[in-house]
Image: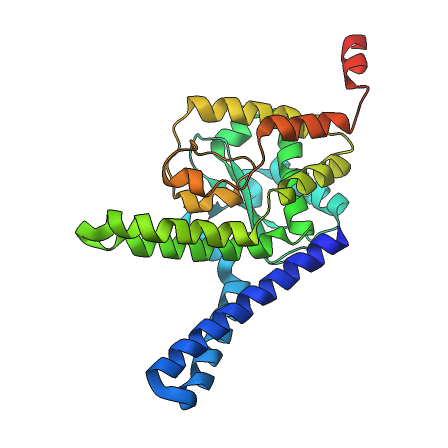
Length: 279
């Protein structure tokens, strides 16, 4: 797990370095060597802003609002308990006020500055054990520092995709060009293995893999029944892929198949079938 966290930090620095090089090149084209330091400083300033505020930016773009303690004390208590078990500072809790069951995490990492957003549909649809599994999965992303890279990657991809949409009558053509670029950027930074690692960590946090496994099955079934509309570039943020894998959305798929994830989780407790029969 420490290797995963260190690798995610390294990727964040590589992303910042690449961004600085791109802006330095733009500075050279605009004003020669004298302009390079100004553009590099701008890159560092933008990088610092993204690091400190990307979670708020992304969550605000998704329409999430902070959930007061008094509005959901049990949910807050659950997150605090699981965060303690995961070894991370308790993240802020946000609510997505819609019926589609989904959850996501964004922010900086285990030392603070992160947030978990859950939808009203998720809280209403999942039994306590399954809800704990999903929350533990998102906390695992925070503990592994996946959120650092995920948040930055989604923010950049969203910017590229939305920039294509402002092209007026040319927007479809621009999206045809910029969409694959944004998707390639996302896949270069995010591996499906991060979801499998977060699943394993969640099972450790909950001391059982079955709550999350059952939740994944339920979320997959719900995603087939309830319509969901959002930017496909946000796909890496969610516990499962909530989009139909067609068109632009097919380019951004970074989650392994649900069947594979459930199979791996069940394998963590090989005797689960016997326990189920005994119950």
